[in-house]
Image (cartoon, rainbow, N blue to C red):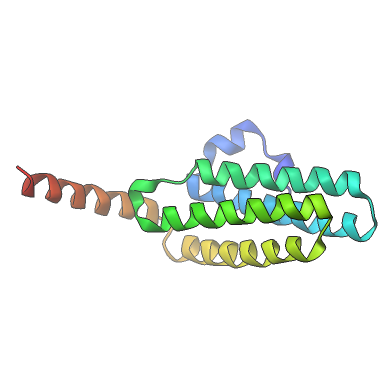
Length: 142
């Protein structure tokens, strides 16, 4: 799947969960391309791909919903760790660091896609549970 071919109309029709899946795929594509460019000693294009990967990590971090629970904070820390690894990998053109990030994001992507398939309306269910929890907390505090 090529993220670059998404039009605005297609993007607006996707759920936030589907957009996250697209970002994960785009991140993987950029990391894989960066590895190839590092192997070819094409450091200019490797730099561009690693910068794009870091941009995607930033966008993933911005999209986190902290009210959904501690998993958002853990993902934020993981995204920050991967971003730091990619900056160092870019400076040193260290293919192993890129491969390490690729492994982590591959596992996250796989889990994300499985969760999306098993619970197509999971976001709505989670939002209802969060709202119910917040409502019960508010009643207890009154």
